[in-house]
Each structure stands twice: as C-alpha cells, then as structure tokens.
Length: 430
Image (cartoon, rainbow, N blue to C red; front, side):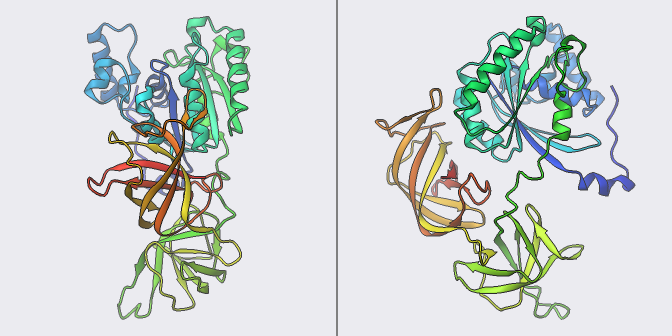
C-alpha cells in the first residue's frame, strides 16, 4: 500500500482536462455498496497509508476476519456502530484515463431521498445484488429510481459470488430476472458483472474464479463507457446567472452574461432569442478567463456578449431562434418529497429552476407511485417523507423548460419551504 502521489506541475493541466464520470451506488442493506467503493479506492491505490492502517486497526479491534473497507465511506458514528449507510457519502479518485466522483447512497427505504440526491447528477448507477438473495423489492425500487432520474448507464453488479462458489447458473438466473423487470422501465444501457467486493473479484482485476465470464471488470467499464453523448447537444440553452459590467476604462462598454451551458452548442454569430422578452440578437463573443472561444457547449461555464443592447438579468435564458423551450406557468412534475413535514395541499413554496427563482402553489396531487409495484396510487394523496408522486404546479412567473427526459438540467427543479429555507422536494418535469 503506498501513498497516492499528487500530479506534478507538468501533469496538472492534463489532470484537470480529464473526463469526469459521476456514478452512484444503490442496493439493499448489506449488499456491499460501501465495501465495493472501499475496494475500488484500495485497489486503485487511491487511499493514504494512514487511512488504511486506521480502518485495519478498527477491524482488528472488532475481531473482524477481513479489513472492513466499508469504513472508508461510512464516516458517521451511527453508520459505523450499526454497519449501515445513512447519509450520502461522496468520494473522489482518478485513474490515468478518468476522474471519478462516487456517491455512496443508503439502501434503506426510509432513505429514498438520499438516493435521489446522490443519483441526480450521475452518468452511471451501480446496482448491487446479493448473489444469495437475487432480485428483491429493494432492487426493483432502486432500478425504478434510476430510470426515473434518467441515469443513462446501469452496471448491475451481482456481488458476493464467493458465497455461491462463483456459480454461473446463479449469475445467469439473476441477469434474466433483472432484464425481464427492466423491460418495464426506460433503461437502455445495462451491463452485468459478477463480483466479490470483499475479495476483489472483477472489481479492478479480472478474477480467475469466473473463467466463464468474458465481459469487462467494473473499473474497465467505468474507465471506458461512453458518456460524451449523455448531455443534450441539440437544444441550446443558456440560463443567465450574472450580468458582468466591469465599468473600467479598458472595458467601458462591456456587458456580458455569465452562466453555464445547460444544453446544446452556441457559436459566434448565432442568431439567438432571449426569454422571456422574446427579443432577438446575435452572439458577439464567447469569453472565458483564458480568452475568447469560437463556440461553447454543455456543460461549459462562459460569458456571452450580444451585438444588440437587450435588457437581460439573472433567470433569463438565451436560446436559438429556431429551437426554443416550453414556456408556461402550469407544470406537471414528478416529485420526491424530502422533508419530514408533510406536503400542504394548495401550499405555497419557493421554486428554483436553473438560475430562476419564483414562487409556486401545489395545485393538485395527481397520484403517488408505489415504488415496490410501480403502480399509481390515486386514493391516497397524503404526501410524506420519501414519497414519489406526480403533481401540478402553478408558478408566479413563466418557466423556460424542457422535459426531464430530454434535458436533465432544464427539466429539473427543487421546492423550498420559505419559512425554514429547507429543500422539501426535488422534481423532474414530465
């Protein structure tokens, strides 16, 4: 075990330019999510020697047979005492091919909100299945949430293969059961890998115990899966976050609109429309700290200047003239309720969508979702913690949005309790 080295000055630029993959883990309690992440970090030499010695000492003190790698991510005292994951834990590591951000999410049903939080920005979800138990209700629940959140790629890791003697028939049976269930969901790219997180089989290194498996190891899949096309590169969307007016002698007339591309591509000279005013202009320049760009694409952060003086402020959106989002004050949305206080029917909440802040009223709860059976519940519209439901909102000002299916940035929103400033719900526009 050695201390991971910092990239030297010559390598810093390359390191910063490396492609970033965000992934989340999901699975039932004791399926081995935290152990798997610990194994990934350990086998890729991404942890410090003193960290390893600390968890080794803790494992020895408990009389555990193996070094408990799950302790690398389970940082809360209650998590360590109970041997479970309660809160979302984020971990970062890199290989020569990619940088990674991992969200280790809890498996318990009462922490559904935590999984939604961790998975909302993920390119890929790892769903763990205990080889001894097969596909259970919690597996289906997590697959449904991954589908609801439009996570583009799924890696189904059948874990604890060492406890079923690396039996191929067990692996194939679980693969078939999950594949049959996945046909009911909007999941396109699914990969199945037989692993043992505890012993390291097929996590980073290929295992001699599964000679019948000819697919990639988990790390090979994470390093090579194609994510460049996961973002919407067709519908150009630029929510304005800030108006830059230097008011200096050098930049006396400079007026730039700073923000992050939420979709598509803009080039110098493109004809654009500004919402909500509807005024049109063309792009004069696309600026970043290093200088001027000929084009920008999602998810770059840039400053755009226009050839015409148009009144633009935070919350406005710059779009292509011939490709505009939906504009409405009435919005149908799938919501995950994240607060212990129940939803108030007809309640008023603050709503945040891209860079725009408005207020809204929950006009109607259309139905709840039974995430065990995927059935709609229409006779019970009481909404509490972790409930997933479809609602109709009315906002005080129009929003400029796409469906969550076509754009995860312009199709998502959050509701905030104005009294406590707590986030009470995360939403996906239908």
